[in-house]
Image (cartoon, rainbow, N blue to C red):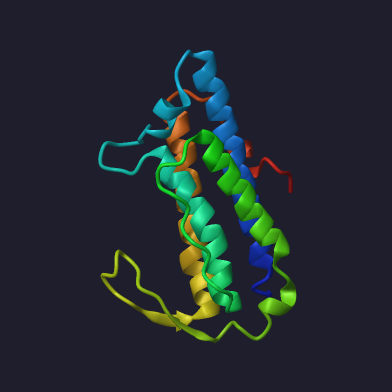
Length: 170
């Protein structure tokens, strides 16, 4: 069975929507408890892990940048690291709009195009086929950061369940 790399665009759109959904549930929870959105965005699962703001930021960045790389498009800029809640919602909406603009033809024949990408803050630069970057590296990272955002919110008492990760329906 052949799978088009374009099918990952829909998967990434779902991840972006799920990130917005869990963030809205977190916002409602913190507001009901009399806390602030800024406080919520600084929540961490464990002290040496990145905060919620970072986790959502990675979802925004990776969901645009990896499909762009694979499609041979200009690389979208990272979102600012200090966005407030409204800024994160806008960045998630922009990521979804970016994904909505992509077309299947942009991914055709790109599976084996070699991409050399610096990762781990430039610690190494592997060259892999574009399809492998998208289907393995980027997708695994997107799920990791979405799950970490979910876990941070759950750890702080936000009423989330597994179905919240599929908030836009299947």
